[in-house]
Structure formats: structure tokens, C-alpha cells
Image 1 (cartoon, rainbow, N blue to C red):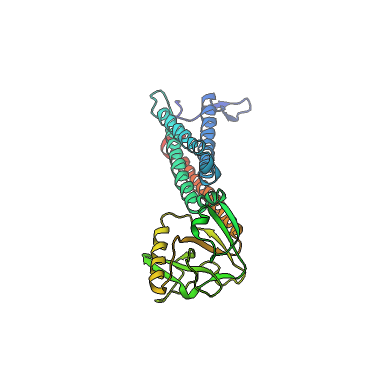
Image 2: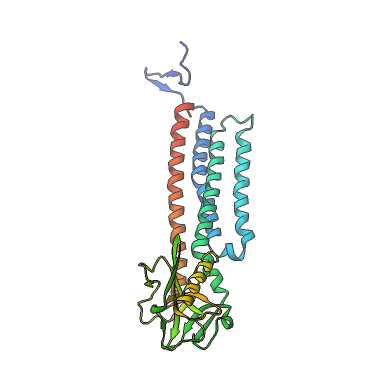
Length: 303
């Protein structure tokens, strides 16, 4: 009697028992290939995501951008090669090639998005500040801003503080808050050093609550590096000039802190935490997609 398709013929044993023939060598090979394809689709896109996200998030993006972006081109090239293999006419099982193509594209594009956002948000300013100078014992009443154009970190003289009575804000969707850094209570010839913050001065009248404004030990500044925010802080300073009858010949903007190095390190730590969360989320996402692919391929193709 003819055997049904995809079943194995029974073999009559001497004692009357029946046994099944072992799987054909071709079937073993297909199962091994599918297992290898599953492992590759699970791990290789994730590895590329990890590398690209790291390369674009940290120092390589700043010091070796060609190397960092080369990893992106390599990932896209592998995805293109996989796509070509998926459409080969002599390929009997192109499904995993197709899946791998889309998995690699997703890995590369998501890694670029995460790495770029992380770098712009946390790490670009830190890299810029590391290439700028630090100045100790800065007297805001004696030194003009033009004398410290290359300053990344300033440590002000004893007695320096924020003059919260001369705080001002400028609103443009977000509220840009400024307060002059002064020493003593006398009127200064030029108020060139300003502590800044965003959305931290509530109320109609300026109420500066940015950074470590209430820390009695804070008398240092970490330079604002955002080119997008700087024009709005300048407008706030111009409003302060008109409201308080003061001059600011060359305003410079700083985050008011006790320890600028600790603040920079916290930004790097925040960037590292973001990378770790991103690679974990992508692994879970890719694991879910591979699991769904296994179910779908097994159900509709019998592999």
C-alpha cells in the first residue's frame, strides 16, 4: 500500500514489531540549516545594533566619525547581500534570507536613531567641553567674557553667587531662564556671566530655580554648548538689561553647579544607561520577531 506523503514506511521486524526508518539525510540537513538560520537571525542583527549604537553614542562619533559610520555602511551592505540571496531563483528556501534582510535593516536604522539621539542629548556637549579650558578663581566683576572665550568650566572666586533679584526669563514655547553671576553687592560694569536653565523659573515675575541655585557651596559653571538655545538666553539677557538698567557686553552662559566634572560624568552615565536599555529592548524585540517567524514558517511551509 502506498505510504502517505511526508511519512516513513513501516519495517517489519523479526519478532513482529514495527519500526520507522530514520530521517533521510536531506531532512537532517534542512533541520540543521533552519536551526543555524534561527541563531543567525537572532544574534547577528542584535550584535550589529549593539556595535552601531555604541559607535554613534560615544567617543568614536566625535574622534573617528568615519569609522563609526563605516559600521552603518557595513550593516546596510550585509542587508543588501541578504536581499539578493533571498531573490535568487535557485534558492529553495529564501524565507530566512528575507527575514534577515528586514532584521538587519531594522537593526541598522534603529541603532542610528538611538545612537544619534543619545550623542546629541548627552555626549556631544561633554566631548566639546573636554576640548575647552578650565579657569580657576574667576572674578566676574574683574574679568570680561571676551577674555575667557575658550572656557568650558569656570570656578569662581569665594563670595561669588547668583543675583536672583536680577533674574529674567524669555518665553518661546519653552521658558529660558537667566540669572547673573556676581561677587559682592556693588553694581558691576558688565554682567557677562549668567547661570541658565530651561523651564525652571515659574510665575509671572522671574523666580530662578535652575541648577544648584540653592546650594551654598556652588560657585562653578559648566558652559552651555547648545547653539539652538543660546539665542533665546541672549534675548532674556537683553530683557534683563532693560528691566534692571545693567550692561552685558559679552554674555556667556553656564549651568550653575558645585562640581562641573561630576555633572559631565553624570551625562556620560546617562548616555551609558540609555545604550544598555536600547540594546536590551532591541534584543527582546528581535527575539519576539524571530519567534513569530518560526511559528509562521512552520505553519505555512511545514518546515
